[in-house]
Amino acid sequence: MENGLILYPCYFDVKLSREEGRRVTRESAVLTPAVPDIERALASCGVKYRREKKSHPSWWYKHEGRIIAECAGPKTDLLKKVAIELKKISPKK
Image 1: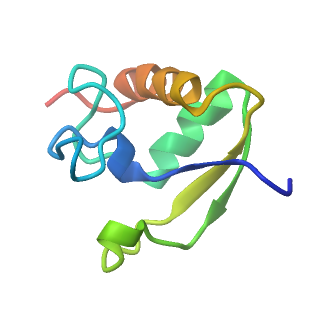
Image 2: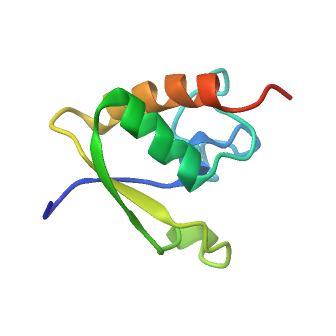
């Protein structure tokens, strides 16, 4: 897997604004998304991925990690699919 689509937990965080890094709608976002949750969502979508111990450039001090997903379509489509699965996985708060 040479190239892929990079996914950070902040893309799905309901507490963040779009300017701060959220990439999905507030309705699709979840509280405290984590890399293991994103891994489960990708696995349920049937997408191959790998995990890296790298941080988002804006949140370099958090050390949350990131996912590199192998997907042929547009990144926005993948983000929507993962957000739907995260909603199913994440606990209701």
